Image (cartoon, rainbow, N blue to C red; front, top):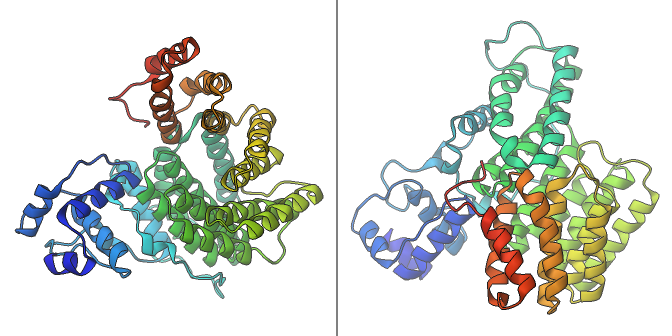
Length: 436
């Protein structure tokens, strides 16, 4: 570890801060300092997840993969357990989600370097005997597709906490055994595609819970399943989701690469609404890198696709409210405050009533946007609407938005409207209660 730390040119204090920061990416609050690093350097093996976190810090600093074992922690870490075919990974991840060991996965920056789209040329047969008896057929396919709809609807309305552990269990105990059972080529292809989308949804649910390590692993499993099922659209959707996650965590260069790869993967045979969905994220990613012309060009393309669209994509919900939200983010990043305000407002007003979590998060973002412009009363109004929805959802991102609300409103507590908002937010805050 000493040699690698020196090569990375990190002081003990810098290493500790980066460990804490990456811990936050996986939903773990840590407060390590220089003294802790000195203990690790002297041979003390820290408790999980520190070996993996140190390895990830060194990997990012050195630009190459460093494992926990490389860093001098005997026995390695959870990263050494990754690998295997798509079904093996799905079984491992589903078991982890079901058992509650979600936090053992660290978000790995090098795992954002994903292969370009190449569909499988053949479909492997079942890998081994499973407790499930008989071949997989139409009944199993219909069941998995119905469960995808149920989980998707529940997650959008109630938030990820209501879905993630149960979806992980379903993937582990039901879907994975079906994938290892015999069936026709067409049946297996359809099941692989539905499984990829279920894995994508599970990844998104953990993203919403702000547990980014296991979220990333479910996304990677989704890519493998989509490739094996020759599902270019499913592959593109997952790449886009990974771009959103990377952007959310501040990895803007990787976010742009992933958004571009998503557009490329779905370039052939994609309907207009799907193209708008992908180009909207590419516009956000370009804006995050201050590529103004490219961002506006992609935004214009997304708008043209939306105007031509006759139906939405089959795996995600994308509509004018979602487009308005993406355009608001682009305009905000490019300094168009008035345009961003209009689009954030439209994104809230146009959202379907069933998409409560998204409505709440955009209300919170609109409130921050108003406050940034010194518009306290408008900010308070938007935050009150956020609080109207907050008790009915279980979302890590919503909980973080509530924390931001309290932090940003405290300096304005001398104003009566701010005091009332702060009192209401404080009453909803439960510091010892997680989102799950």
